[in-house]
Length: 153
Length: 247
Length: 48
Image 1 (spheres, each protein chain N blue to C red):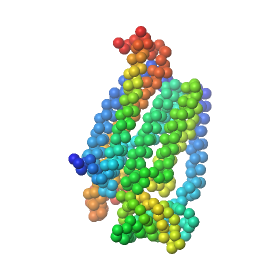
Image 2 (spheres, rainbow over the protein chains, first blue to last red; image 1 turned 180 degrees about the vertical axis):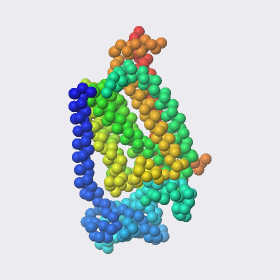
Image 3 (cartoon, rainbow over the protein chains, first blue to last red; image 1 turned 180 degrees about the horizontal axis):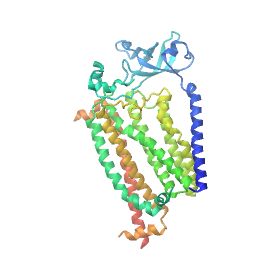
Image 4 (cartoon, helix red, strand yellow; image 1 turned 135 degrees about the horizontal axis):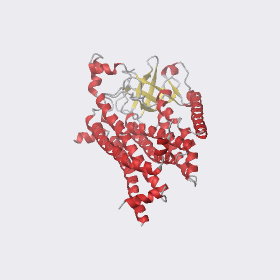
């Protein structure tokens, strides 16, 4: 490479590295501020704001889904396995909404510490498997197919 | 280090000929792989335990998403080579990768939206993964707009190359967004360090599709580059000689 | 067969996703290929 080319290569590498570093730092700094996301433990500890909308995320607790016959409104608790928060929601739920599923709810806290949601979204985890495998997994990690998925968190 | 092979590859008539010979070697495997992947993904793969047949969108969404990012890296590398070596072929490559990369980014967003609506309950969410993929689309479009804004093509190539390089920072952000923020989007299934958490009979069609997308992309970029070379070298002796060869 | 097209009730999402992919990829491949053919023909004519 000619000296001029070497110099241009150095400048290009410097620009890419510099911009990358600056962006990384900016993102780290913003992380806590731009997303009003709280876990059930944070909400239970009183860290969540009372005067503004925020997002709460966690798992739908087993056996916690209650709804009155003929009504759309649903009540369930969201947990991060340490603490849990009751959520009220009146609207259509996504297909993946079920017990034990990860969900994200948008809304605000009322005076009783109940989270009133105006939107509930279901999360999907990164595991994909046929129903038979899932059954085998539930029966215990003893099955040879189940072993493969055992190490997943 | 001897760079002659590199400079020789950059010579337009030489590359035009090589590209022409290479296109079938990528194009035909691409066709076979894409058809096999479609068959495997729609028919052979079992339904997911949670999403049923709805999960089959993975076979178009994920390869498109991977390619949208890989294409951007290819664009940035070409742009950098063009910037440093002042190689015309590399500049043309960057400019011709851009529209295809933008198309795959758009495809990722559209198929993702079609997947998110029934499963998550929303077409769109201003979430780290989705927003950074949208930024990728704007980077492609911004690159094209800036490149074409200059009356002199080579000036445009140089200016837009800087944008392409700066935008490179978005690629790791897209990849790690699901780990760094509370994202609606699930984490990585395949590109993580432990074993992929997807059943083998579901994984195979996905990898076949991904290979097919990559071969397709290579073939189409080569065709586009041949067109670009003919257009920009229209009045040179080698292009006129091509015309004489065709009877 | 009709079960296959129903896609577990997700037909409205699965088939459009595949349709846009196939259409876009077909168009993105055919358009430059036709353009290359047109160009070669124009160059041949230009020589005469």
